[in-house]
Amino acid sequence: MAITCKAAITDGHGNFKIENILVQDPQPGEVLVKMMAAGLCHTDYDSLSWGKQLIIGHEGAGIITKVGSDVMGLSPGDSVILNWAMHCGHCFQCLEGNQHLCEVASPVAAGSNGYTPGHANPLGTTLNGQPVLRSFNIGTMAEYTLVKSSAVVKNTSKKISFPAASIISCGVMTGYGSVINAAKVKAGSSVVVLGTGGVGLNVIQGAKIAGAAKIIAIDINANRLEMAKKFGATHTLPADKNDTGLLKAAGQVKQLTDGRGADYAFECTAIPELGAAPLAMVRNAGTAVQVSGIEQDITMDMRLFEWDKIYINPLYGKCRPQIDFPKIVSHYEDGSLLLEEMITRTYPIHQLHNAFDDMLKGRNAKGVIVFD
Image (tube, rainbow, N blue to C red; front, top):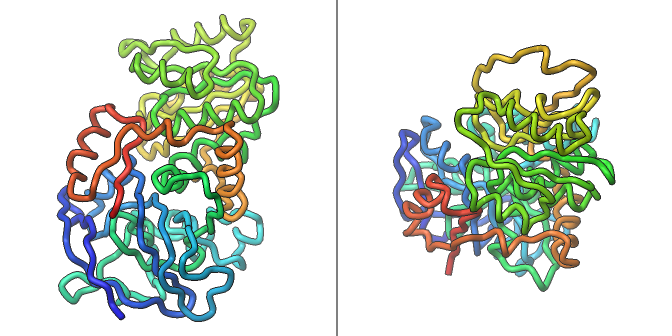
């Protein structure tokens, strides 16, 4: 039986409204999820201008209410974390172990602007009788969402709250995975983190879990630098707006790392002008990681690559949802990874305007939409 519920829907031209949508029962391979919480990030704001109507949201946690036929291992009542890196399991990239780059199901690697054409059930969600797309094929800012079974990971933890579980979906996974899966940070190493917003804080946490001996946080926001200490930074450096490419900050990093530079540096600012900055922070043969997904043209001084430096741009922390999400929850349960402390504010869905405003003005480490 179809369900009428509220959802935040953008027109693709910078605007959104809270509308009533109709969500159908799941078809084979699908599950219907009652959303309990949805994390908010800058990508959600960007999605307002993708030129197409979408249900907003790509982070979330909820409870399965119905399952379609052919769905194995999931049942009504299961608590789940939503995951946008769906995978088919049989394409070239999946067979290479790159589930996050699936050539069939990934909304980023296979499609563009958060939507892969050809969902099995295009009429599963409608607005005024017309199909409405879901951002990243999951559209978490809705009271109910209909998704493929590969878009959910069962959460068996009795300790974690739904708001905390919801932010694992992207921000936490991206930061943590960039350290653990992509850079493979070694114990005893030195790490620099440029930008200490939600993703940067999780890079810091990932570096701490990896056993990094020195974790240097750099940000222009003094309050965020204080927060970085709480999440595991051993040193903090205030950034200067007039420091082009953060070259002066790079000099300070070298002073803290025996004059060589750090072993690893992670860019988490999403500022195109800082795309090359992590290269200036690392030693010869060090690793620079561009985490924030800069997609604009930038100019790089190739001398920054001297010598033998590696620059990588991983997607979604090379996420393997069924493996990585339980690991993150386990780290949360043993106290080595903080989640509740990252959530600055929660909002009902009708206050989404306020949530976006707080995010854009840097008031939140993480804001979360909560549902009744």
